[in-house]
Image 1 (cartoon, rainbow, N blue to C red):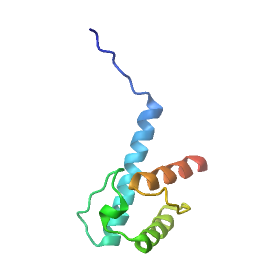
Image 2: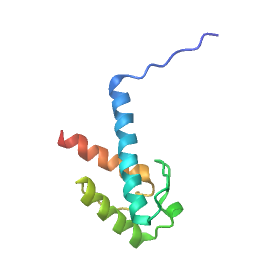
Image 3: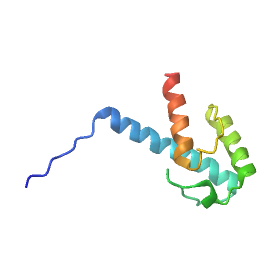
Image 4: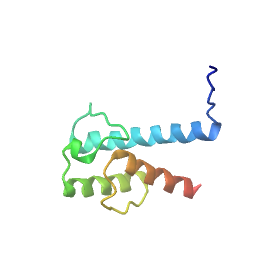
Length: 96
């Protein structure tokens, strides 16, 4: 049985690189916010895993908005770092 190779196109690579860059930027903001310079996050990291209550989450999102020049409408669907990153990347792409 022959394996099919899946090739990643350049736009997909750029999108993945942009997402990783945004995750890294959000991670740095979180490290400062939580005063934990070694804190690591992924797109799947949930806010509750970071021990952020709803007030902390809103405060953090406001800081992310200020530092990254975006507007994030808080909703119950925003549960993970990946949710925030998707919103940021969509807004940045729309500005281009």
